Amino acid sequence: MTRSLLITGASRGIGRALALHLAARGTHLHLLGRDETALAAVASEVAEAGGEAHVHVASVTDRAALRAVSARISNLDGLVAAAGISGVTPVDSEGTEVDDAFDGILQTDLTGCWNTVRAFAPRLGAGGHIVLVSSVLGRFGVPGYGAYCAAKHGLLGLTKALALELIPKGIYVNAVAPGWVDTSMARTGIHAMAQSMGVSEAEARHKAETVVPVQRFFQPEEIAHGIAWLLDPANTMQVGQCLNLDGGVVQV
Ligand SMILES: NC(=O)c1ccc[n+]([C@@H]2O[C@H](COP(=O)([O-])OP(=O)(O)OC[C@H]3O[C@@H](n4cnc5c(N)ncnc54)[C@H](OP(=O)(O)O)[C@@H]3O)[C@@H](O)[C@H]2O)c1
Image (cartoon, rainbow, N blue to C red; front, side, top):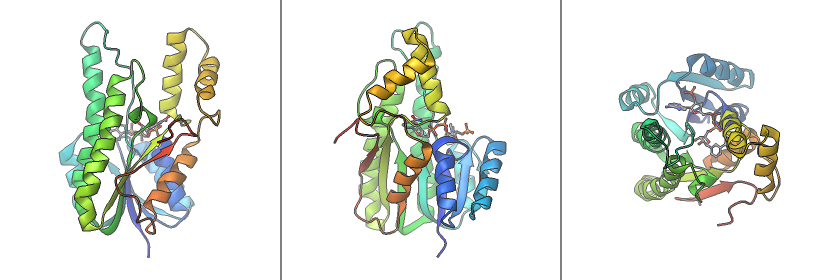
């Protein structure tokens, strides 16, 4: 039977890679994000890969918009909350810009996932799977990334609580914690790292890769593979777990 899945943050990066991975398996997809043109381009790629996709333009920070999208969907077998933003929020910054950045990251990366589950969990039945995309920065702290670390750590707490709330309905809630993944988000992070260290982007990337035991960044398709494993209907053992997809950085 054709499965139906909704992916937030589907316009690029990990969300797009997951959409294409699932399309090749004939999944019926709902792609959600803010950029209609980019989402439509992914929907075309999904169709070329043999899948079918509907585009939904909404921000995960807009609860009413998410509820409106949910009202147009009859049922889902899976939900992946991949939408996210990053950015530095040094605690000793001058002015209020950093406070706005802090609020924005929390609203998108943590509250946005809550909003997404609130809106779409009612479309899932027994055997449904929810995956929230955290990060290695949900496992340890990095100076200057207080908002992002707080959001991604918070997401793991949310995963554990929601998993226990929804397992009586037969819905499996889990998270993934990727390390460095070669997307626009990581490229922006490397750019910021290079600037703060006063080195080239190539040097900053090399330094970042050397702390990964497998000595490299991951491709979004590799993360998609891990998420798809959690989403598999046969996967009924993981409840409130976080799957590390980081090449050995975190070993718990
Ligand atoms: N790349 C990494 O190294 C890495 C590592 C660990 C975890 N992650 C996490 O993986 C997830 C995907 O990141 P990525 O690397 O694929 O980043 P990306 O390439 O920058 O993609 C981010 C996606 O999130 C969407 N998005 C952002 N704000 C949104 C909002 N308010 N409402 C709806 N959609 C929104 C973006 O779409 P629009 O802007 O078009 O709306 C885009 O599709 C994020 O949660 C990120 O924190 C990434």
